Image (cartoon, rainbow, N blue to C red; front, top):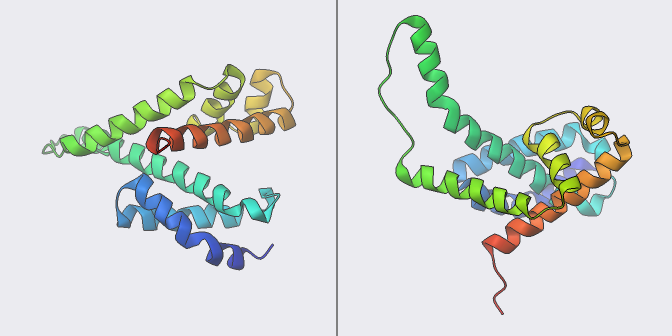
Length: 172
């Protein structure tokens, strides 16, 4: 598989997806670069070149969610560091619009996850939300690594499908 060819073929489509997920051009660009870097590092995990676009988009979505979480936690980290130094910070809370969007994203994911069968939900939560290594997830659940990967793959597909259905309901 030629990474450069795959990336050039699919990066524009994934960028457009990241615009919708991240909400602005700057974050979408940063997320795409980070996703491409992660995809390059883990290209050996891609079994089918035809799945590259959806694989890269899934990586990008995870990076975007992590970015949003970091942004939400930034005021707490700033406060903690200033408290250690004996200082105070001025309030720079995310505006109500940003808080509302973040809340909607969390509710959407919670709804979609709530609709998953338990064996898929627990693997998705442990692996993608808690970032627990795959081997540890398999051990904790008492299943083989192959079974964990299979469930995670199915869970990711169901989450993508569920989010798509929630965001863009059938127009018929």
